[in-house]
Length: 98
Image (cartoon, rainbow, N blue to C red; front, side, top):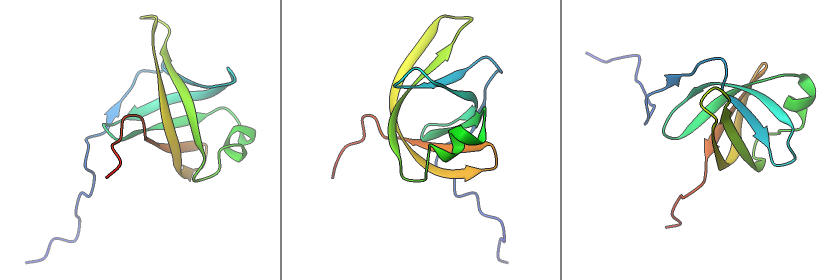
């Protein structure tokens, strides 16, 4: 018997609250981080202008902020896909080069 649906994800996705935001290195708010995993995150962007400024393959540094807890972390990412008004990014900070 062959299974037609295979979960290829290495990391489980975690849904986040509505108050987690991603900001680029210029201070521009990109949008809300809607989900994350051990390998990346999904950003629901504010406008088509933001989507257009983040082509697939673009590397940048973003700060993820959670205003209620006053927590923030800055990470290097690479844009991996677009899904309408959502941008899927991969974390590249701390990856070893083999």
